[in-house]
Length: 230
Ligand SMILES: Nc1ncnc2c1ncn2[C@@H]1O[C@H](COP(=O)(O)OP(=O)(O)OP(=O)(O)O)[C@@H](O)[C@H]1O
Ligand SMILES: [Mg+2]
Image (cartoon, rainbow, N blue to C red; front, top):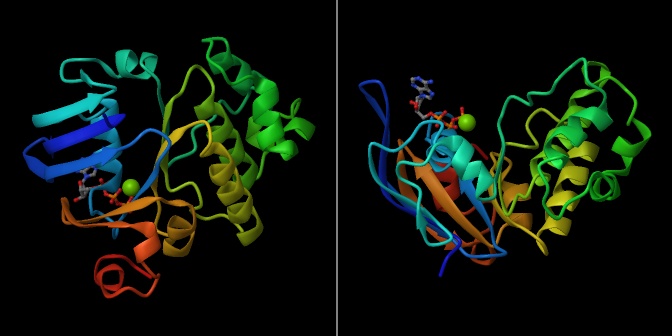
């Protein structure tokens, strides 16, 4: 049984439909990447899984449980970790404090594990988050997403706007996490996506238009060129 099954979900913002019959499944231990242009529906798919923007119809099933009718809070309690696009941190809290809040909810990951994954964060433990660079903040929000009992990590464009060296650090972290976690990664960096993913779904105009093993795809694949900014 897949850890996550999204079955024919339709999701709206008010009257405006953003997802049309989107289906995808994620096996335990997989990294699945969602690719697509701006506005394709990648973020909305993650918001539908978390229940922030629930589906109007269709089913999100996690670990065999129907999530319809469960609040975002209840879904997170089941083991979802969500790292949104906008890197929200508590600017007045230190790095350590930002990590201790979710770590207090329990789970396998400890703050020390987070520092092992991103050693740069350990050196910044006592720094207020508002003083971090964009790359350091990104490491912090990814690290934070692991804590508190996360089993399925949803990452929305973790490499966006980061310097190449930091992108490489984030990539290495995702590869390292593969052993312990299941990951849904939204990424516009096709090369990074294909490096870390087991499987890829391509979204366009709110629909899944292609599904493939990452092994079978090259960055210059015609389908990717058509539907993803390369
Ligand atoms: N809060 C909102 N209210 C109304 N419409 C929205 C809202 N958020 C997104 N949309 C619309 O839903 C559609 C899908 O947007 P979504 O943010 O899921 O795309 P995306 O693939 O994540 O794009 P990007 O690469 O720019 O992050 C777009 O047409 C977008 O304009
Ligand atoms: Mg988005």
